[in-house]
Amino acid sequence: MLNWAYTLGWPEVLAAVIFLFFYIGYGLRTRRLGAPLGQRGWPLSWKLVLRLLYFSLLLVALLGPAYGLTQKPVRTAGKDVWLLVDLSRSMDAPDVSPTRLQKTKAELANLVNRFQADRLGLIIFAGEAFVQCPLTYDQAALQLFLSTLQTSLVPAGSTDLVPPLELVLTRLGSSAPAAGNLPRATAIVLVTDGEDFGGNLEPTVRVLARSGARVFTMGVGTTEGSRIPQSGGRYVRDARGREAISRLAPTPLRRLAEQTGGQYFELTDRRNEFPLLVNALNRVEGQAEQVRTVSVADNRYRYPLVVALLLMVLDILVTVKVIRP
Image (cartoon, rainbow, N blue to C red; front, top):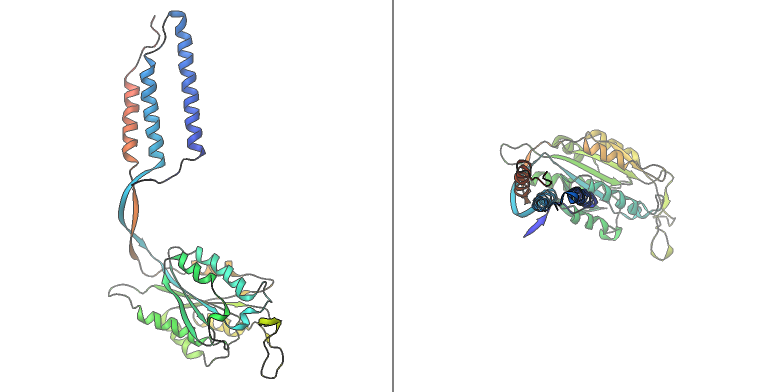
C-alpha cells in the first residue's frame, strides 16, 4: 500500500503555480518572437512535456512515497519513571483549584507528553497501593489511566507512603537486568499532600537509596489547609467530630527526596513547580542502552529523484532551436 511521508502543503502548491506561470510566460514570449519570422515554436512542446515530467517527479520525491514496512533497530538510553499518586480523600481538598487531584491530573498529563523515549508506570495509593498501569511506552494508555483517577478508586483510609514505595521496590526486583546489561535508571515521582499516617518510613527509604532509584516528591496543597468535601455537601470530620482540615506537610517529603538524591517541589495555589520537576527528570540520564525494533514505512523518494535528475541532465544536453534565421 502506497503512503506518503508528508502531505501536500501550500509551499509545494505555490512552487507548482510559480513554475507553470513562468513556463507558460516563456512559451508565449517565444511564440511572439517567432511569429514575425513565420515560425510557431512547436519544437518547444516536447521540452515542455519533459520539464513537466521531471518537475512532477521532484514533487513526488519531496512528498516521500512510502511503500511497505521495514524493521529497523532503534537505540535508546531511556529510563523508567514511576508516577505515585495519592488518592486519599484529602486530595479532594479545594485549596488548589479546582481540587488538589484535578490539578495534579492536568499537570501529570503534560509531564507524560515530555518523556516519549522513556517507560512510565502509574501506582495509586492511600492506605494501600496498587499498580494502575505497569511500565509502558504507550503514552495513550497511560493518559487514559490518568484521566480516570479519582479518590474512590482506592479503599478509604489515611495516607501511608510506605506501600507505594515498597511496591516500586518489588517491581525493581522483578525486573532485574540481563547478564552484561546495566540496570535502567529509575526515577520515582511521588505526588501527595505529605500527610503520612503510616508506619516508619526510614527502612524503606534506606533500601530505595541503595537501589539507586531517585525519589522526586511533589507536595500538593497549602500550609493553611482546607476542609475535605464529601457527597451531599458535607465535610470529612475527625475522631472528635470536628471538620478535618488537611494541610500540606512538606517536611517528610523534603527529607525523603534528599535521602534518595531527588528533589522536592510544590504545587500550591500560588506556585506551580511541575516545570521544574520536568527539568529535573530530564537530567536523569538513562544508564542502559536498549535496542528496540520498530516498524517504519520505507521511504522510496530516491527512485523518482534519480529519474528526475536524469531527465534534467537530458534537458540540459539536448538543445532545440526554436527560432531559426
